[in-house]
Image (cartoon, rainbow, N blue to C red; front, side, top):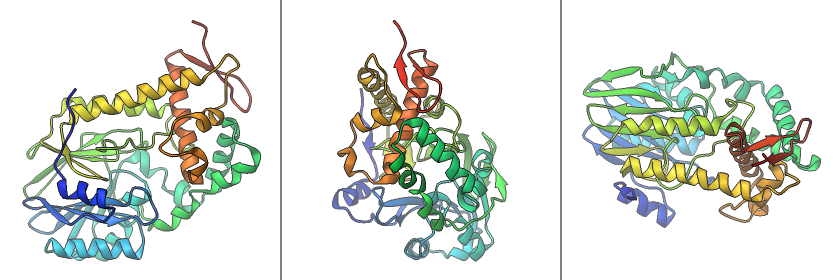
Length: 349
């Protein structure tokens, strides 16, 4: 099996040194701008900036903090432009580090904002009136077997990110396969649900470039969770979306985090293998008496001891476990009990 080839060498070195990578010209007329995410293990989101001849088109925007706004403006200035030159913001998905500053950019420049409709319908529930979202999340945690005293902390753990979004409804809703042309650039939206219901990658056929958002990252796998705002089988959707990218052989992959790389096929193989290994680990942990999702979550292998993981990441971890259990259900390998909490058991061989 081949490995990926890192092309964002300065980005990878910056990652190793725990510093922000530089603004880089990826191609003539295409820039990569790191926008910081303080106190977050992802550290930064990579915003991509296309020169169109009449202005600028951005892919993703960073989250809504003054530090991020300053970094975005400084990066655009280093590329020879200004925030007022931005004509469009193409957002790969709804999460705050991608959508958060889009509205502020539009306010400053008059740019239009694009988002997939499956994410657009979630905006109010997620960032405006969250009462029902919190109720449904609490029910999901109860069904997962999360202890009563821990549910409020986990249910409310993501509410602080609401302030990281400048709420703005999109002006354009992406269809799968929608084509955009501007200047010497072409981009086609590829609907790749899993990380979010409306996640899209962007493909340039002319330049053989894939802007992969959070769908394909070079080192880690993005969070794929059962969530009250997700499709019923998000991991199944994610794996299908990975297979969809098999049709493409990009010269370079431009992800939203970490660093640029080549050899998409190798990375797709690695991501699929990772999730298959996780499915096997869960099956191995399921004894004759079965287990709740939360019990399995606390016993699975994570990047650090589970009790050292922050609340919002524990909730995401539980959602990941649920996503794997749902996929095992669809494969006929696991069944769940009725009532709350769900007890998951292996099916009889």
